[in-house]
Length: 164
Image (cartoon, rainbow, N blue to C red; front, side):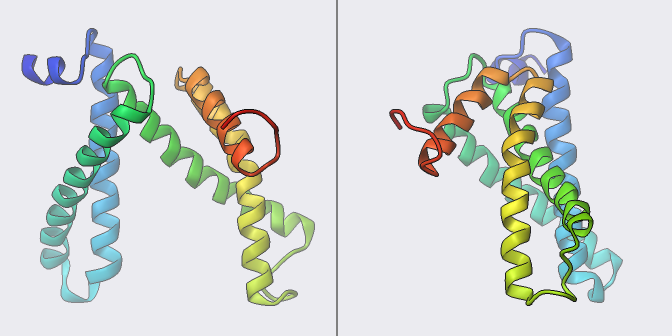
């Protein structure tokens, strides 16, 4: 455990919550992926493939951490896990919020061409994504990181001016 704490620069035991949440989320994603793709082969095969997906996703995630560690300015390595959790929650939440908003406006798959519906769905999702990203970033104690990330994203969309 001491080696793990040193590798992720964890100073307090409560910070272990983020690697634990990351592993649980990764496990859930691996399970859902294998269940959706391979449920017709049976539960045992699906669970075996979930374990394979878990370790594959973990390997990809750790490689991604090494690459992003050079690009993102964070004080400690464990904060990268917190940032990934915020991105995951924000992406899911923006889609969950987008559906009821579209229904409330009166936009459904039945009254629009499917292509137009999905384009509008993505646009509405992106609008809420911007708001939720800063909100969840603040809730997870990473407001400064996500505020800078948001400004950079808005500059790339040419919605605000400034240096990239």
